[in-house]
Image (cartoon, rainbow, N blue to C red):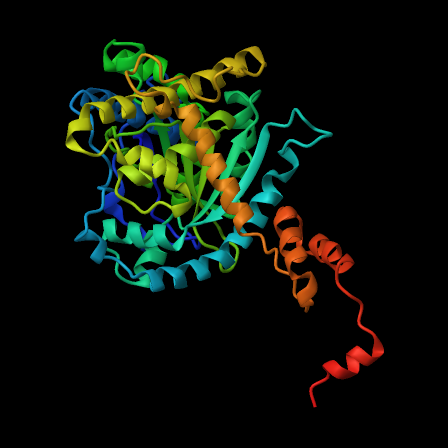
Length: 470
């Protein structure tokens, strides 16, 4: 990932819920610990406390210890450390699977993607904004299967060299994005995601990982201590509360461990220390897997509308500066970014990356303001804040580059349209047909055929006989 991981819980489980597959090395604080309140009474009466209450209390105490450790250690976290190395050198590109193997994997996951899309539509389809229901909490949902190039590049960074290794370990081969309506606040978002809890408890879906991602905004907005920022202000950037994430985690742990029968074996997953990387955006990522036959794990990305639009651009910027392949359609953007690579432009590159980071933070702040006022924020300059005050040329304004990206995509889409006419044309009207095809290049194939038919001489009976091959 490209951002700071503040909350990450992993459940190393399979849909069958078998305990044989657990990797205990991933688990942290055990819940088998003495209760903070003495349950022994000398008045002849024992206080009534259920197994569930005792486990919940122990869980709460363990989390408090773990969060205290997180805050204390966050001071030591390096500014540019990332969870994995992403910049690929020429030597590293030789590792991992080949492009042909990556294409085989993509063909396999395309089938799984349809199953995932249908499953998620059944859960949240009625909550998506429509003309008749414009106030619904979800603006849009979409699915995606990882591209063959991305599979090849990621396998290089992880040193996965076979199809089985990738299918077992690459949990984001399939993905699903849920974009919230601008009026959707934390409470509404939690009400939406609360639909997962009964599905988890009835073993219809498995929660494998929780990853909460936040930008590093301390230096930009509030130069206070890390403790006060982490506990108070940075939580405002989250789409759901930490309490709700604990609730999700509890639901899965109860299923794994059998709370009613084994409360002393309940475990809590350690969250890794926060890590900061080059770019930042706000999102909640969940790794889920349906227990339906033939299902695969998938990454569910949850974010707001502005952050989603900004991330569409930011993903391409990350790919370029991390040494990954970017589609040739984005050649104008690539030319702009390539100018920042020479050593003499290192200072300008740093200013540009800082500008991108600040702009992403501003997007989330705009979302929070929109939710608070229940009104759209439409900047006259565009989606992002301007490049002013960063000492960069106007062509490095993100609004300009964002529109340039959209223009590249539009031109590529038009170029893919099939404007050929599968009929025989006479030589006399050949020049006229070429003119028609150019003039109506945006027309559909069917419409173009009708236009061309007007200028095509009709065949007579004698002409048909002559055209037959003897």
